[in-house]
Image (cartoon, rainbow, N blue to C red):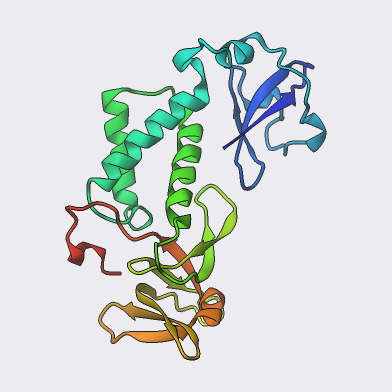
Length: 233
C-alpha cells in the first residue's frame, strides 16, 4: 500500500491510499471517498500527486501522532490481519481456498462489522500480505523465480520453493494443470526443480524454463496443524 498526497477536484490535498504495484487509487484517508480525487471510471492523473502538505483536516487529523485508530489504512490493516489469520486456521493455501477467505470475511462482518467503504482497503492489505508471503525466500533453497500475479493487480517475480503450488501457463494449449514443487536442487547442469501433478509421477524442469512455463499460485501453507493431504494440488 502506498500513501501519497493527492490534489482533489476541489483543490484540497488529501492523503491517497494506492495499490503499490499498479498505482491505482483505492481510497483516501478521510470520508470524502476516492471520487474526491478521481471521477467515476477515471484513472489517477499523475499531475494530482503532490508534495504539498495535507490541507484536508480529516486526513491531517488521521496522520497526527495521537490519532490512534482513526486512520482508515491502519484500521483496514488490522481487519486484513484478522481475515488472513482466520483463513489460515483452515490449513489450506490462501490462493487455493477462496471459500476460506469468504468465510473469514463473513465472520469478520458478524464479529466487528467494518464500514462497507473499508472493504476495498482490507482487500488491498490482504493482497499485500499474500504477496509478502509469496515473495518470502525459502532458507537454503536455490533461487528460481516465476511470475506471481497479485489479486488486486500487478505481477511480480516470486521464488519457487518446496510445497509451493504452480500452474502451467497453458494459454497455447488450453491446459492449465496445477503442480506442487517437491524440490529445488543444484545439479551438475544447473538448478533443477522437481514438481508433481496430482495422480502423476514427479518430473523435473531446468530452472531457466520454469518461469517461462509456470506461474505461482501461492507459498506453501504455514498452518502447523494442517494435514499434508490438505495441500495436494
